[in-house]
Amino acid sequence: MIKLPIYFDYAATTPVDSRVAEKMSRYLTQDVDFGNAASSHVFGQNAKRAVDDARGKVANLISAEPREIVWTSGATESNNLALRGVASLYQRKGTHIVTVKTEHPSVIECCQQLEKEGFSVTYLSPEKNGLLDLDKFQQALRPDTILASIMHVNNETGIIQDIAAIANITSSRGILFHVDAVQSAGKIPIDLGDMSIDLMSFSAHKVYGPKGMGALYVRAKPRVRVAPLILGGGQEMGMRSGTLPTHQIVGMGEAFAIAKSEMTDETSNIKKLRDHLWQRISSAQSLLLNNDFKFSVPHIINLRIKGIKAEKIIESMPEIAISAGSACQSKGIEPSYVLRAMGLSHEEAEGSIRISLGRFSTKEQVDYLVDRLIKAN
Ligand code: PMP
Image (tube, rainbow, N blue to C red; front, side, top):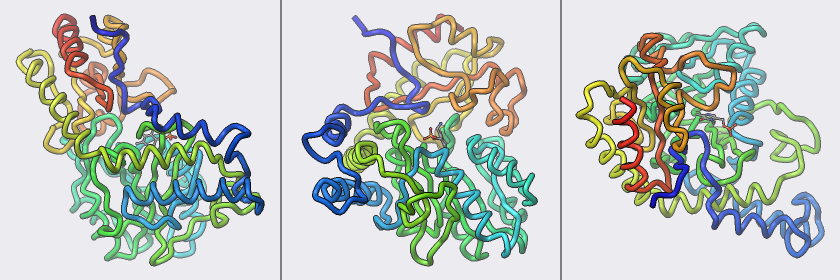
């Protein structure tokens, strides 16, 4: 018998891997390394060693240097620090920012706030397939553009933007480039040694680490600077004050190290599951795919059932965790702005569901889901 309920919402969050949880727990209690990493005594130095080790592991997944990793409370903060931190320090150089309509709310809302503060922002529309047209991107750049913020993999559709090509354009124009890599880290390779990317956001809880933990990569050479959002003891080279949460940091480090060693096999397993799922349901004529697999990570399948609202589908199978759009829009029931920006109608977006696969997904679970979807349709 299959164990219910079944989780197909890995893009919203992942469970903490038990190997990660085990390691984290060692940094909480009195026996070992609970000290403050800023203290000079042995307890503090033990904690600092653990923090440094984790910094190395996060950097290693993306071929960055440990000193380029700034700990944050999650990718929402990383995105805020990147956008508002750059806007604040580089405004004398220019006040124009370019982004895409399909970005995460933590980017879009920062841009909207910056507009209120006197910056101007261009929100580009993606093409129908979700990809950004690079000619249109180039045309949007102006002499006063200081920053472009474009995500690597979209959280609703799994669409992968060509960040290497975008980085070539921004670096040749002296424009800073920020990438939200929350949904790509640990899923597909990222080599920051090979791309001119200045800032990159990460979240631990999408990579089988703890919630409330993230990082911002801030390029060291040439040095990119961000104004801090949080002032205090000057931790993290002054970019993010606050006592470092050793257990959370250790968890993120361990999660990223596991991702580094298991990513290739894991992504290939997930691709097999995704292909199996699609092979079984593609013959159902009323099921339509919103994300072209050619341009997507295999972890996310976004589809719609003609004539049925996503809400109804989700309600009809309460033992399966899937989502309409993303969990990030806590505000309400408006259909996905991401799908709308890709040209889907209000009704089509309303009928769309996101299925996301992960480390613990099995063929048996996928078959159960397919049977239920075929029944619902
Ligand atoms: N960016 C993207 C693409 C995301 O999917 C999320 C999480 N939904 C975030 C940013 C925010 O991350 P966090 O939950 O760590 O604040």
